[in-house]
Length: 156
Image (cartoon, rainbow, N blue to C red; front, side):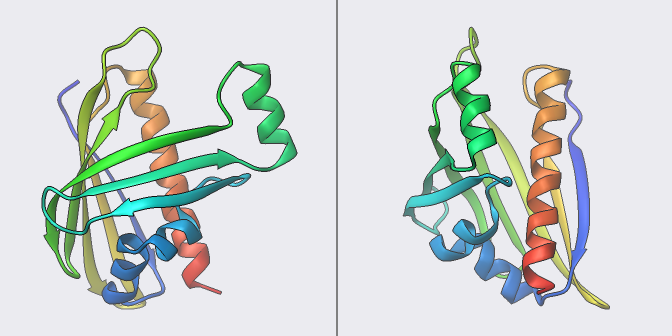
């Protein structure tokens, strides 16, 4: 489980526009959460070693019911530490994985490259695997949904 996973998506925006959506509280809040959830940014220090702290909250009735049925909190705080800031080409961060039952907390790295191409920006996300294949698949699914949300936001 040492191989990274890469996903790509071309979005109809300039690299600077994508950068701004990825690196500001308003930008992150506008697209990061999956459908039926809200993202609220508490802290963003866009420097190498700086933190991004946000809370994701279930808001839609079906998501609230699902979370309650499975004994999960409706809101979860997440923390990332920026490792690379190269505006508007590359951002990398380590995410604290502290929500896995019966598993010690650990960090994992995501690197995002933005490349101007015909039609917009190619967004390339490279992710280290999580502790097992099931959790890695969940991560890839979540990040794929993030890119779909981003693409939908900039196409409107």
